[in-house]
Amino acid sequence: MSETAKKVALTQDGKRASFNLFPDLCKGCGLCMQKCPVNIITWSTDLGVYGTPAVCTTDQDKCIACKNCELVCPDAAIRIIVKGKK
Amino acid sequence: MTREKIALSPAMPKCWNPETKPHKFCPGCGHGLALKMLGEAIDELDIQDRVIFGCDIGCSLLSWDFFNVDSVQTHHGRTTPVITGIKRARPELIGIAYMGDGGGYAIGAQHLVNSATRNEKVTAILINNTNYGMTGGQMAPTTLPGQKTETTPYGRDPEETGYPTLGPEMVAAIAKEGAYVARGSIANLRQLKKFLKKAIQNQVDGNGFSFVEVVSSCPTNWRTNAEATWSFVEKDMAEYFHVGEFKVPGQKEEK
Image (cartoon, rainbow over all chains, first blue to last red):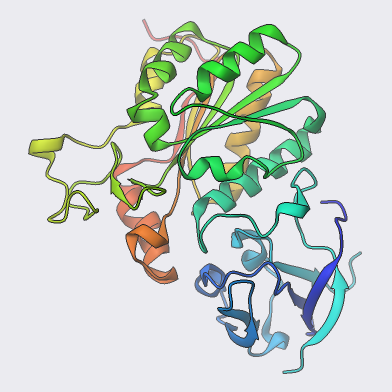
């Protein structure tokens, strides 16, 4: 995965990984919420590209950095950055 | 929980065209997932400069500016022959024909069947979402028995309209040695990427026809939320459309 042009991301820092959401890409389909194994993804107060709610995590410290949400996002609106890796 | 604003690159495949993102597909559409896996497969095989991407009419045509590769948008159902023609004229290129179930199994079925019989060295990728998405969710050849669509408001009746088309099984039955036929699902994306990579690699090796059907979703026309979408793809569709490889080059023909 190479570096493409940068966009505005809303970042939430946690113990194991940070959750980065791109409001310009998120369409609010909710597929990621169903696939989170620890059920921490929920609707955000920030709006996505279609004016629908984007997503955020309730407690980023509970994130196990499985990257399921990043994988199932059809719009690549989520990026998980694992701590200690570059 | 605080949310800070930072500048960051999205985790997109390198061959995606970032200027056209967010793409034109509906929220939750399986096309985005299939094209993400196809993009990662193209990146990993490092063939971006050699790929010709052809898309059909239907929802799949919204991918015409999806990749930073040479693209062509063809007449309805004619993606396979157009890509076949390009591949015959320029054999060093890698032709990928991308279509929906209407283009591949209804109006374009003859092209799919004949390309498979001739063992053309192209890769065909077919997205199966059990209806005609762009025109408003009418019954398609792949609509499941009992499924409600715009034109089957009481559910599809197999007595009247037959059973859903099983494309990979059909192509595997008529394709010759060297063909690669598989069915993946957006419920298992890592496996889907493996299938797509093998299908493209099969063409790079010059073995023969490669065909991958992708079991996909259509939340807009199914009128489902995220939970019901996943359950329809993972349970209802998986019962009828079995995921797996149906023909792999190198296996001996059964006599």
